[in-house]
Length: 271
Image (tube, helix red, strand yellow):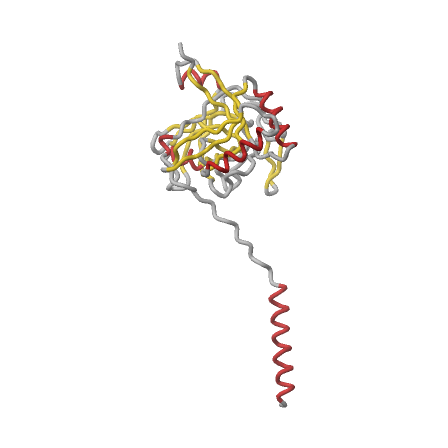
């Protein structure tokens, strides 16, 4: 066979192989979930139940996931159930939950398929007796026959993080009853808008100046210690009523500052 024909044959084979490879399906690897930074779970406070309106986003009459229809309960009153708890973390950190709140893996929250959002629940690890109070603000888990999905912090505090799952009892709480159990003190609530949290103080100051240039008052930087360093939180407030905070958030969104959320802090009232 002549050299020219040999080269043409080689080139044809290469072209065929390239076309076959181009048609092959690409495998997309999902990022694995993980715990994020190390934490001391004992220093993280449980959720503090309080009366809240039902989420406008997270409570349809029913919804479908992976071809299966789930129905949202009208009320969480007298709800008690036992089953398997799992957890989720860094893969979803910062994403919007079904209730509309951003998911914070370092807070004591949970996801449930049918409880109204939000619902406060007492979760007991039936293997070691540890208990937490968590705020259910998301939907899930949709894997197998698991009952509830815990935030990374909640799983760590219950002692099931290292195993991945645990057998738990979930008991719905009413805010009035649970407050009697958590404290005998009188509290007042202060509502803030959190604009962002930064390890670099200059970034926090730039955001503060931007917001203040819009005429928004009471914009402050709160400094806290975290993992050997400092964390600078830019907040507006406090507000006497949540409705006022929502009005300011709408103003900020119109100015292109939309990644905000409200934070409610409970502080003891001095007698």
